[in-house]
View 1 (cartoon, helix red, strand yellow):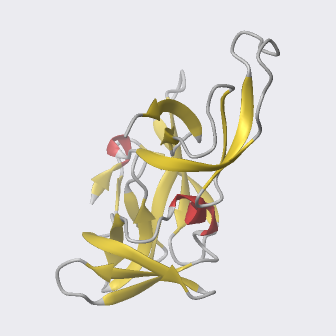
View 2: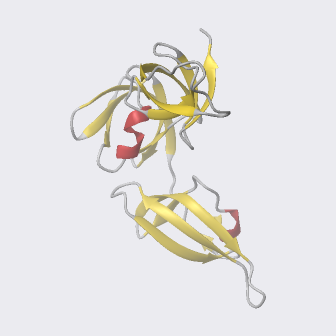
Length: 187
């Protein structure tokens, strides 16, 4: 059980018997009455997003989940396939529910899977990841404006806006939460 005032982004809650992950929360402290949290939670089974209002003093049931490190193998058209690094067991995670994570999945990379009742229900994407630029437009020296950017495409199909000096074949660090360029990686 978790108190309404202790709910954070990424908290797994059990709502109507299904696991949901908190994707947005706002604490409201009205002039009259008790404070409450307005929570948006995404179903990890169907992908539907629901909004609930929970008083900060009330308790809600949290989903008992396990975190397992698994290596991304491939996608079979319906699922992203992962292999447990220790037991070599394979798990499928629905592509339909987690389509927004596809550009961050790299073959052979290790990701943390959220497991509920023996089933993989979510993929934890690292906060920052390194990608290789595979498609980039060239720019002419002198065409620059302070802070000018251009779109590039990475090896996974992710499109990111980067400074004009980034070239094809270079590696960049990307913030996966905001999809923003962080820095060029020299290695």
